[in-house]
Amino acid sequence: MDRYLRETPMLDYGSASIQALIHKHGWNELPETERVQAIYNYVRNEILFGYNIDDSIPASRVLADGFGQCNTKGTLFMALLRPCGIPCRVHGFMIDKKLQKGAMTGIVYRNAPQEILHSWVEVFLDGRWYELEGFILDKSYLGSLQAAHAECSGAFCGYGVAVKDFKHPPIDFDCNDTYIQSEGITRDLGIYDCPDDLLQEHGQAMPAIKAFAYRYLGRHLMNRNVKKIRNRM
Image (cartoon, rainbow, N blue to C red; front, top):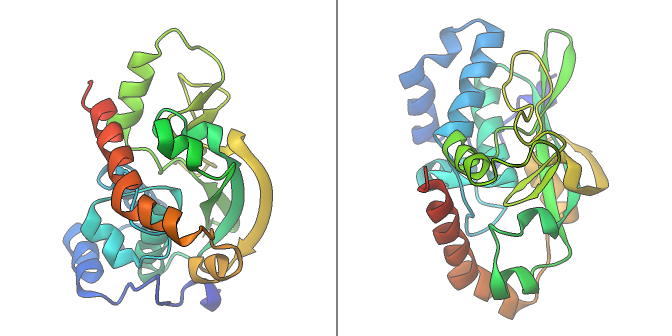
């Protein structure tokens, strides 16, 4: 299991900010299951759903930003689990952009690629691997969406969600798999030891102009829209 505990440039858990966070919460002192639950809940709710400058930023940058999406929140989650002795790996996918509609709007949505890189984290606990994806959306954001679409009692796709049961998505971890975007998956890219390896092989390439527009305009519009949705509560 050593390969699933190592530090990497993206999983920079030796950084002062990550070490201080682990010490502050005393995660290393908790029993294993409670340790995973506590870290999972922290990443889910204290790191808000939002769009960072790039998928390849290190965990310490995600923590400093205070927000992230599937890939970046997953990087931080792994960088908190590994120094706490919890083996973990990343599973890559492509998802249909339609699950982002609503969070992405207008010209940003129209210019996004049809398939978007996605990942979840797999955690080894009590002799088995758990698939954990439900940490992507913070409770405030998801709660606002559910309130705004109170009539929906079945499947839902949009605003960063793709689930079969919108009212009761499997997002709480208690030794179970968790999901929030899995119904939007179009392709399985396989399992990787770390996000560095996943992005080296499958990093989302964009033309320079589109990449510039996303970094300096598109993601800010998306984050403003996500904040507006969250604040409806």
